[in-house]
Every structure is written in C-alpha cells, then in structure tokens.
Length: 320
Ligand code: GDP
Ligand code: FO1
Ligand code: CA
Image 1 (cartoon, rainbow, N blue to C red):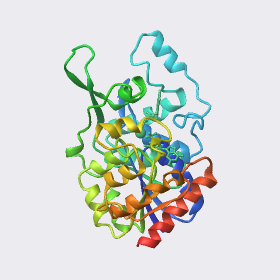
Image 2 (cartoon, protein in one colour):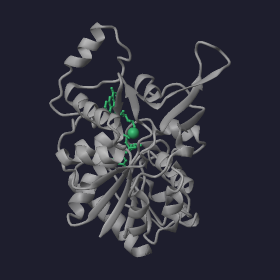
Image 3 (cartoon, rainbow, N blue to C red):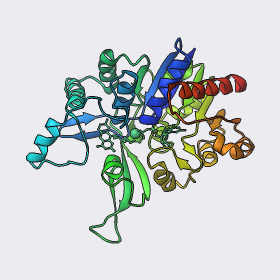
C-alpha cells in the first residue's frame, strides 16, 4: 500500500510513528512543511523536516518533541557570550551538525529534497521524506508593531511562535515566496500514485495549510484517485498541544474539529476523524459532505497512535 502523508513537526512525526507500527509493510511518502524554515547564523534550519527525521530515526528529544536527545548547548552558550542574537531559538550542538551539513550541501548546489535524502541516509526514518518544495518559502505573521502604534509588521513565524509564544494577535499569516514555489521533485507523482492520502493531526494553518498553498499540490490532491482522510488536531475545542487556536483565529476559523473539517472542505477531504470527546460534531461534519467517525485521537503512546492510523485507513477503505 502506497500512503502519502502531509506533515508538520511534532503532530505529524508522532502520527507517522503510529502509522509505521500499524502498517509496517506500507510504502510511506511524507511531504513535509518547510514554511517554518529559518536562516540563523548563516545556517538553514528546517524544524519540521528535522522533527520528522529525528522522531522516526530515534534521535528526537521525546519530552520536548523537537531537537536531539542527549543534546548539549556549548555553541549556544558561546554565541551568547559574544552577544550574538537571536538567543531565543534553541539550537543544540548535535542539532547544529545537521544544519551545517544541510547548508554546506545547499551551498554546493544541491536542492533541499536531495539534501533531505542525504540526511535521511543516516537517520533511516523508514519513510521517504520530501520537503513540499525546494524553493524557499517562509511563513510570516502580521502583528501590531509595538514600536509604531497604529501600524503593523510581519515577523518570522518562529519569532511569533517561539519568542512571543503566539501571544500577540495574529492579523494574517503570509507564506512568503509560496506563489513562485514549485512542488519538490516526486511530490506530485507520489500523490498521483498513492492508494491513500492522510492528513495527520498537524497544524491546519501553518503546517498542512502551508503545504496546500504550494501551487499544484492542492489540485493534485483533489484530482488524486486515492481518498484523502484527515485526523483532527483539535480535541474538545482546543489544540492538544501548542497554540493552533491563535493561527486558526487569524484565518477566521473557529477552534473546533468541525470548523477545521469545513475549512479543508468536502472538495479536498473524503473522510475526517474526530476524537470521541467531539462525537457530537460527527453529524455536522457529515452534513458538510465529509464522512466522519469519532475515535480516540490522543497520541499517548505508539499503540494508541497505531489505532488512530488503522481507523484512518479503515475510513479510507470505506469511502474509496
Ligand atoms: P508542529 O510543527 O511541531 O507544530 O507540529 P504539527 O503541525 O505536525 O502538529 C501540531 C498539532 O498537533 C497541534 O495543533 C496539536 O493540537 C496536534 N497534536 C499534538 N498531539 C496530539 C495528539 O495526541 N492528538 C491530536 N489529535 N492532536 C495532537
Ligand atoms: N521550539 C521552541 O519552542 N523553542 C525553541 O527554542 C525551539 C528550537 C528549535 C530548534 C530546532 C528545531 O528543529 C525546532 C525547534 N523548536 C523550538 C520547535 C519548532 O521550531 C516549533 O515548535 C515548530 O516549528 C512549530 O511548528
Ligand atoms: Ca512546524
């Protein structure tokens, strides 16, 4: 079975661990979000690709959900002593090696997809991990400018999310460069050839929404013969983790499993899973034209996550 998964960072990576456990023989292609990418100290950092790669390659810091296990922080401390900004984004020594290799290969002319493949040769994630695009796309968030009252400014997504903890009101989310971006080599073919396409419980705006914004990807999903089934990242009217409510508000979508399903729409989704806590929203999703089931959606361990993956594949088989 050929499965394509559109993934952000932690939500996507943890779901993939369960999917692999549920379907060890499946041929899984992951299309990763690169809108969170940031250039720091001359290095290209790809948080969501790295989170998937480290999680599936047993290198992740489990408690944090991002970054490397057994990490040390000497470079960060030394940079701080030089007074070099920014200090709010935590790059550890082991993680730095990944960004150095990536940046060096890209400077030598390799595309991000080729570089990601090379990095995965070490981590052996057991899936084919492809960035959504080899072209540079960076998500920015429009907020009030505290230095110039009455005016707004766009800041990098990581500054909004990590430095400001999504506290300022987000007026708009802008994926800079996306109009000119092309899907990375292999993305459209994987979607066209898939038997099943899954949206894990990733952020609908800044993870899956960004991937869908790459010209050609949404159309390929709509035209694909495979059913598209999504799992809600919103449980009981709130994100399970993180501040997805803040970016949903910015795009005018209520923080509920029902509203997220309608936001993707029946044109894109052939099935939607909500948590049992949201069972009351099943009829509303179905009235919107999307077959829906309520199952436990908390990724507490690999077994519970594998059960979620099985439920998604069952629904895909039902609607096919
Ligand atoms: P990020 O890039 O690290 O923010 O990760 P993703 O975009 O892939 O996923 C983030 C989303 O995962 C958040 O909106 C969370 O609500 C969701 N999430 C995290 N853990 C769980 C879980 O156990 N169950 C469900 N249903 N969603 C989860
Ligand atoms: N998230 C944080 O909350 N604080 C950090 O300092 C931080 C550093 C970091 C470094 C490398 C990496 O791959 C991810 C990192 N993240 C950090 C996570 C990540 O940037 C965000 O949580 C996601 O991109 C949000 O979608
Ligand atoms: Ca992310």
